[in-house]
Length: 137
Image 1 (cartoon, helix red, strand yellow):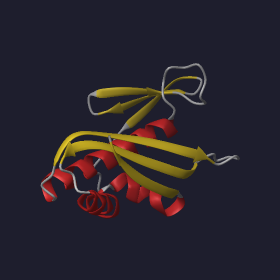
Image 2 (cartoon, rainbow, N blue to C red; image 1 turned 45 degrees about the vertical axis):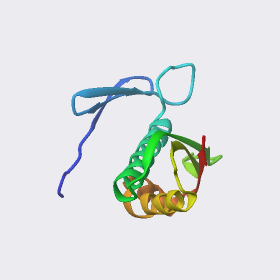
Image 3 (tube, one colour; image 1 turned 30 degrees about the horizontal axis):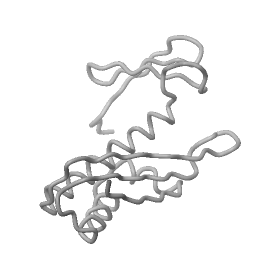
């Protein structure tokens, strides 16, 4: 098997893990308690928000030639009621601001980013209902 990416998780205590990603360490905990550490599902949602945002921004600026002043991506999700309590529905909301952004161009860029370039979205799509929208702010 070819290995392009690699991370390592080390058990700390209870359900807390330290995930080693190159030179960084991300501590995760489960279930959601008073812990300040994110859960694995929250990190998955963060990965989706980051990946979707990067690809959308890239398509808008590099492929469409638009100028984006700001881009924010919010991801909301519902979990299955029984175990395994994976994500069943995801909503992605893109909020952007820019000079003379044409809604037709933004919509086309969003479709390209989500359908062709975001690997995290591509991995989640087969088993999860995903809706997305965008807003100018």
